[in-house]
Image (cartoon, rainbow, N blue to C red; front, side, top):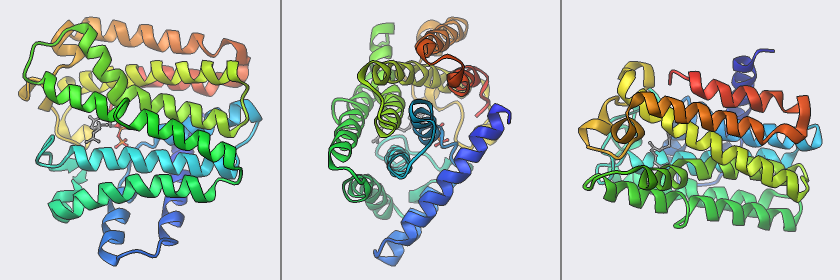
Amino acid sequence: MDFNSQLRQKAQFVDELLRQLLALQQIDSELKESLKYTLGTPGKRVRSALALWCCELVSGQTNRNVEIAATAIEMVHTYSLVHDDLPAIDDDDLRRGVPTCHKAFDEATAILTGDALLTLAFEILAKEIDEPTIAVKLIAQLAQDAGPSGMIGGQMADLRAEKGDGNEELLKYIHTNKTARMFRCAAAMGAVCGGAEKKLLDRLSEYGLKIGLAFQIADDILDVTASSEQLGKTAGKDARAAKCTYPAVVGIEKARELEKKLADEAVAMLEPFGEKANTLRQLAMALLERIK
Ligand code: GRG
């Protein structure tokens, strides 16, 4: 199967897991509607696919624990998008080709939807992972990468940087924390669920961090080069908001070079896995060619 079909297959699998998990929740019906809406919109599911692939790589198969981990990551990622789109942050009307949560519902519902997604992710990890030591590792990993010393910290620096002059060091800090940490998290959670020994876990974590940074550079480039229709979200916003991005600070050509260098470095991390890691190699290279 070619790489795009493999990713599509994993995305469909994750869509179904999310649907099933949500159906089991006994919660307020309006909240359930908004959760269904935000989780059901067509995301690429790259982070959850990464978790599933890393588990397969180290143990030869997926298992129930990594299915839960993959859905938890997708929930935290989706919460970050819902809150990022709010008027107080990025103020966006379009996400995944449809109206953002606060446009489809209202602002208060969107805030609570994000809160619900974030807490539900930790609830399912605490309740559904069969082995307590694995559950604690996954919870700690997700909290650390999504929390104040990870994604939230990166987002805070990103907001501040809009008003100041960007430089490469600041840019790397923002993009690593805002975006790449969630990729590292996905890879690490998948490896933990597959029972990876420390050396291989570290390799996959580093791989995740590098493709995550490449993914954000690609995102910055697409914001300049692609249309809103193509992206399913408003294009050209970074420049209008004078954001600290790679094209703005180093220019598009250097941004593309950096992206390629990171993808190559990510692939080098996979050396101990041999041919079994070919899907992850293809993922690193596919990020360079992505069009949305
Ligand atoms: C918690 C408010 C808050 C923010 C955290 C992650 C983040 C910071 C904000 C979301 C907006 C954004 C541009 C993040 C950078 C990461 C990124 C490129 C997200 C989009 O990821 P995709 O392309 O989205 O995987 P889909 O829709 O495919 O899931």
